[in-house]
Image (cartoon, rainbow, N blue to C red; front, side, top):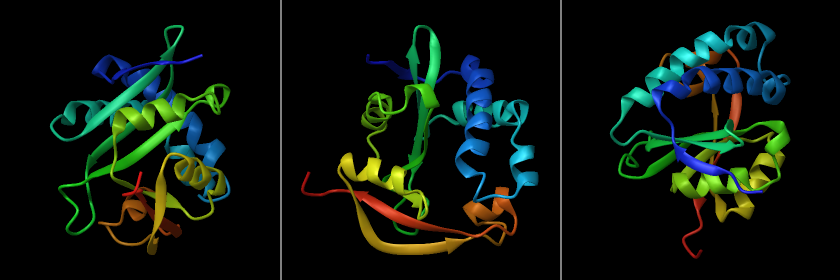
Length: 172
């Protein structure tokens, strides 16, 4: 069953905050300290979603709905890597457990039309999904974690994660 894909709106923030905060402990329990995960409650994440959706411009988010309920979301924006600000970076893509492996992630990724993404090295299932969606690993691997400008360090303090860069296959 396909989902309806539409742009996220400010009124979606509470539902998106609930889904987003529930996703993190499930997906990142082995990678992040419990005290970090505890901070990502529905209210805090809804607040962040309000900021995401209000940002506008090149920052875009979509939701997937089934039977009137949001079952996934995706967000993109300008590339955050040096020299890639003209490219579209996939910032996040999440699908609720009961809607995974049903095509929702593929629909969301198609709507986002990203040029590249970063994925944590340990997430083999996620990397496999992106490979199936015509993304290929680029020879870039980075460990992030400290410093105020670090994407990982901003939320996760001293947690270190190794990320792999994947780009849309130019031959696809």
